[in-house]
Image (tube, rainbow, N blue to C red; front, top):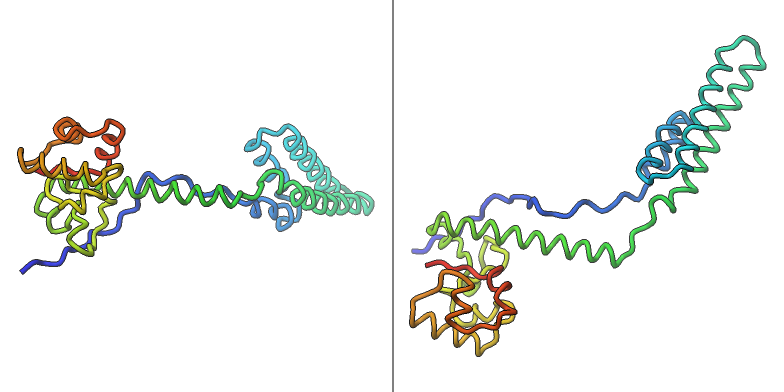
Length: 228
């Protein structure tokens, strides 16, 4: 009685691309929600990130306005207090409007095609990571590889995703036809050579014995599994 393969714990691949860039909303609201007090830090951060002298000057101006406002509030008399409140209010309003206006330039919206391409790249890198992990399992533990059906898409639904590996030495012709660039005529050559010598140890040996086109050898090395 054949046991059903047990899925391995999910492991997040390490080769994923970085997260999509921020839309800048958090940065833009800092001056507003902090009543202008966070403006110098916010604009200094943007200046460093974008290497912008103009933003650095803005950060310095807002910092100077805040310092002057608090000095006026600490001074004696109603007029300095009024001036201080006006400076605080002005810094708050101007910096908040400045941040909202600068946001589209500092954080331009991502193009839909860029987002789609990023997802495609992420998926491809994830599949590559799956293949690397599955290949490691197959080389270190043949029994586990057999139970997980690594490299054998012909054996029906599998709980374990090996990233598209094909066991060149054991998979049937219809599975070998899933290898990139492999035509039915090439499949026949692989099957014939495999029957004659019992299997291959690498894509390079397969290419030599079965007279494969050089252009498809790297893809076979990526997707082929050579278990002896």
